[in-house]
Length: 469
Image 1 (spheres, rainbow, N blue to C red):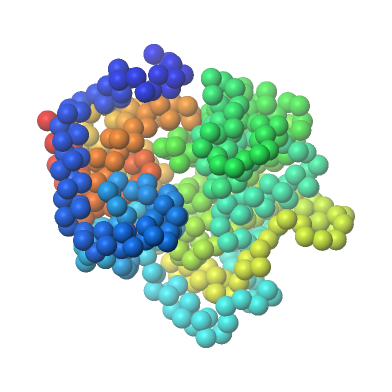
Image 2: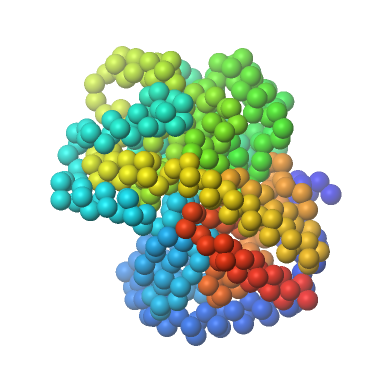
């Protein structure tokens, strides 16, 4: 059965049964109902706060996707430190979500907290450069190998700004993304392949411009499709994660990026790598670790230790083209930047995080812990004879509902099973284990105790025992 047929018929019960091989679905549904009851009974304070929030917060939460957790109502956080979160009812959790990468190095790292406290008495924002900005730019250049940098408040903004700069610098109107990609809330990237044809993503709200006019989309790992899409010479850049992460992880096949970069260079198309999630690979990200040579690079959430910020860097030659495009443009707002960008508070946090938290030693410890988690997951899954795989990118680990890792976005979408995910996630949460509410991703930080990894694996084992029967 091909992935396209499975995708088309995903709602059919026979296909769901195929994806749930080894799971007793009746037992799974009964387990889910019991877990919902346990959660509701054990979290009266969160329930009361959720009831109050319903009156004045859209969807009852500060951001609508906070309803995507597996809980019957929103779980309210009270505090977070290191690899631990405490909720409003006093329950403590081992946090393998870590703010979906925003707190990848642990919650409230002490050097960042101290830097914020110092800067809090010295001013938050002036719309002028601070000394910290110079240090941070120098460190980013050393760490990532691109010499020229700018700042933003989120990776979404950074990606948006980079696309605008590169279209201006190249004079080309189009961009290319990979099917199933995620680059935040950048409108241009919400284009999917449906039965082999580009289509604006149905979930994108309020979009009035046809995105398919200037956004091309191909499957990840498909070199022939990439070559054909760039052949007309009108694509400014390819925007990509070096490993797809937000539709479940999709790894590049051996030699893919080397060949893909050759194709881009031949067609004069620039490469932008969004390393917001793949920064889990190492201190210089996936690109530096694997020898990729992007023209531009974006890093968001984790670079400020959890304080809202993002950075984007250019090669020297691209930076010159960008500066020329700006100088030749008429005066006025460029559509790039916001008033609070590179504010002093954020820059102080970023400097402290890069200097004292996001270190080689921290990564070394995280990678050892992540390997323990990944191997443990494989052992538990094998014990229960489930046809699932485990994928790892540095400190980022994920289990997926297929025997082999998916090779592209279409294949990754086929094996998503939100109902099964919700059951597993709630079972874990009720036993003090948090993983991301989106698919089955887990992170470890240098504060994650080995015993907590082992305890997680024990709980996961118990969960599969109850699901599989």
